[in-house]
Amino acid sequence: MRFEDANEMLKPGYQRFESGYQELEDGKWVVAGLTRMPGCRAKMVDWWFGWLGDIEWYRLWHPRDHVYSAWENRVNGKYIGGSHLVHEYLAGKDGPLFKLRIDFHDPSETFDARLYKESGALAVCARPGLLEAPFHVGRMTHFVRDTDYGCEMRSRFWLGLISHRDPAITLPETQVRAMRAENLNAEFARRLHQHCVEEMGYLAEILPVLYRRVTLDDSF
Image (cartoon, rainbow, N blue to C red):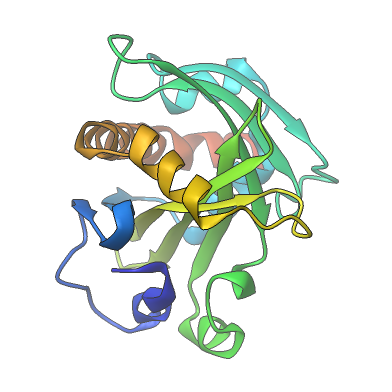
């Protein structure tokens, strides 16, 4: 599924592709993950991104892969408009350490605003990019629907949508294609998929108890 088709996620049911990785046109890739989270609710996931702090808490999310965590521009626990600055491995320390800047934005920049509101779901949306260079490298969403047993998270990473963080600067298409060819391949997509499945599995385990202990909200 291409980023341009993101609104398909707002429909009931599932798509044919819910977990794995696929190469798209022009060297782009999509990575998908489906995590079922018993005892969790969408409101807990929303809280998590606003509460998550430095490495002590970030390591709860993935004890092996997560190395460093800080935030910029997160105000009063609101992650939209904030940037998560992280160092992390993807699927183990036998691969490179990635230094990333994840810029969170309103879901209306990914989905049709009316259809998103009507869906009743939560979408955590961002532009992942490089921490040490001014580039976004894709788009991502963690789309969460409440269920009778808790909630489910459908993650998507659209890789290769490369742009400058300064919207006034347009990168030449030749540079974009070269960056895709140098950095995106099946091995990277595989590692990202494994990392996503693992970290969201960890989150599903810890979030119900953590949320209730910190917020004192025991409603379901």
